[in-house]
Amino acid sequence: MRTFLLIFMTVWVTSCKVLPPVEPALKEEASTIVFAVLQIKRQSPDKPSVIQLLDSKASPGQLKKRTEDPASTTNYLGIGIYKHDVLMDTQSIDHPLFKHIEYVNDENELAIKDTILPQADFFIRFQSNGTSNEIRISETINNVQFEKSVKIKN
Image 1 (cartoon, helix red, strand yellow):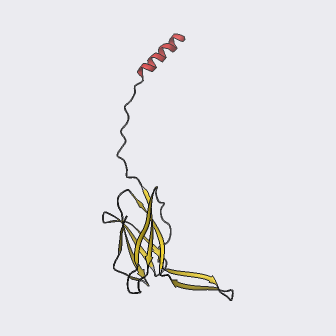
Image 2 (tube, rainbow, N blue to C red):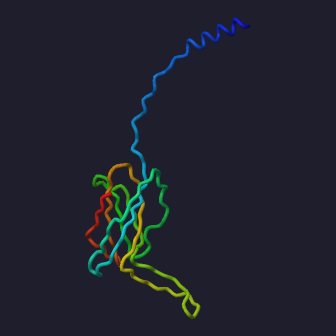
Image 3 (spheres, rainbow, N blue to C red):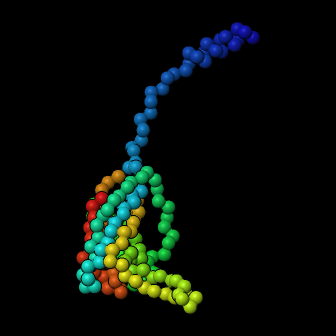
């Protein structure tokens, strides 16, 4: 039995080969989530607002599928995410300058107040695959869309 075991171990050890490392397959571009903080300032009712990028952060990850409803008011921002001038994703959010506030008034009744802010900060998030993206934002106020889009390189 000992001889058999010795022969088996010898054959087993000598038959083992060291395989060369396997080359990795083509690397996929790393998926990242980009969080962009923007500021919007109101100019006048007949001119589009001024929008500027305040900050952006990228983090590794994958966004889940969006299930939220599109903007539900007549005042909203339409956001297009472009990669090399090709539309990759669209989003719409309620306009950050137009606030619909519900509160309890002095008579202890529920009241509604609409207000327009002079400026506001807001954020968007989108999926990026490591290449530069362009964010185009169009502003719609009272269902009238301003033709000029704001382009922000990220």
